[in-house]
Length: 78
Image 1 (tube, rainbow, N blue to C red):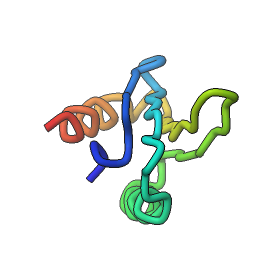
Image 2 (image 1 turned 120 degrees about the vertical axis):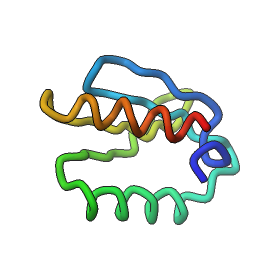
Image 3 (image 1 turned 120 degrees about the horizontal axis):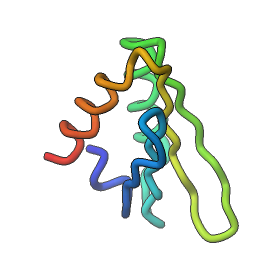
Image 4 (image 1 turned 180 degrees about the horizontal axis):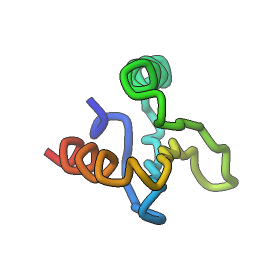
């Protein structure tokens, strides 16, 4: 589902992944996805950031969950 919501993804640091939201992204679907992931894995932190030129979904994890974020990135890439 994520590829339809985002236009670009960038690994900012080992603990942070940023997804630039597509202009026509279904925000409700995005919120549902983030809520499901947070319910499953409470160590994830999701935020939507409003920047001058784009909207960003930021996904953050603590140091001991970096490998899980790696796996999530790999899953979202397929």
